[in-house]
Amino acid sequence: MGWNLEGVVFLRPPDVYTGTFDNAKMQARHERQMQDKLAQIKDALDREADPLKAMKILHVKDHLQFLLNNLAQFRQAGRLEEAVLVVYGRLNSPFSSGGDVEGWNDLFAVCDPERLYALGEPVGFSSATVYRGSVSGFARSLSWTPDRQRAEGFAERWKDPSLGGGELCEVDIVKGDVMVYLRRRHEDEVLLKPAFITSAEIRPFRGKGM
Image (cartoon, rainbow, N blue to C red; front, side, top):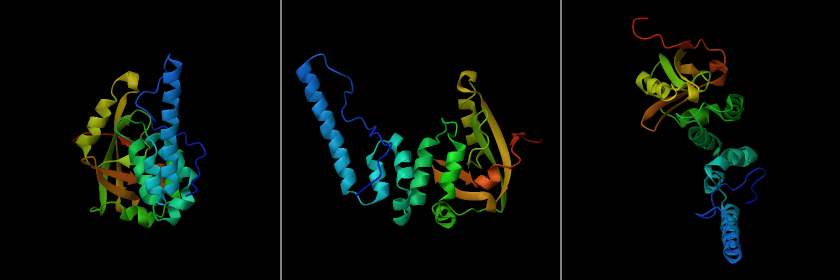
């Protein structure tokens, strides 16, 4: 399969040892082994017709670039929305700030909204308050949760000023603001529509009775 690999650097370590040897013969053997394993990765890519499976052959740090390079193939195979969620989920963990917000907004914009929504859980509310615990200054990310205690835990992980400091925010939403409702990593995650979150009235968590 002719995948576009521009900018893809095959970051999967081709060998357990990635350093160098002082002994010239051992170093030459090591380099041959690395090249052989890189060739195996390339061969596996060439044989794979499913873009999502091809992406997963690569190191996770190469996934986003591979996806961006081959958007048309993902769309044609009906794998685009699933791949975007896979990549977004891996790069937006509780320990990440949210990354390139505009980049994610653009990527979700090329997805089919109905296909994307169908990949999640049914939204069982007409309106709700959702929460986000993250490093300070990244409240307008797409990822939120209806589980306040879970969000508090994320904010707590970032509370060290050397890590950027943590904050807990909340925002009121209606069902139509939800792009997709996911249940993974033992938590409920609500991805909100970029058009909503860019202008939403986000506020610091007010606490009970506020």
